[in-house]
Length: 122
Image (tube, rainbow, N blue to C red):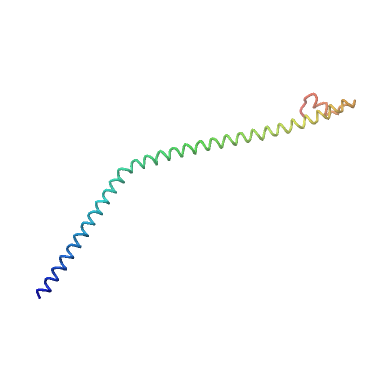
């Protein structure tokens, strides 16, 4: 009976030590969680500020991109217009060469050739 009581007391002491160890580890974990939460609360404003600045910069870059796209579209339209004008000018140059060749051959100019030489638009 005494032996059983000593065994039970020993088991209770081991369980009490295990419980104490578990409570100590839980307390340490709670302290780590509290420290992490405190760090998160301290760093949250910094991260929020950086995110806000990044969003502002992103909106600014988006605006710049839209402006550049608009400029590119305008320049493409000008380029197309210039190409069309160049094509028309090349056509007039060709017609003038034909008219010049006709004159060198002593042939009279046709009405469209004469209008082109005078600079009349057809």
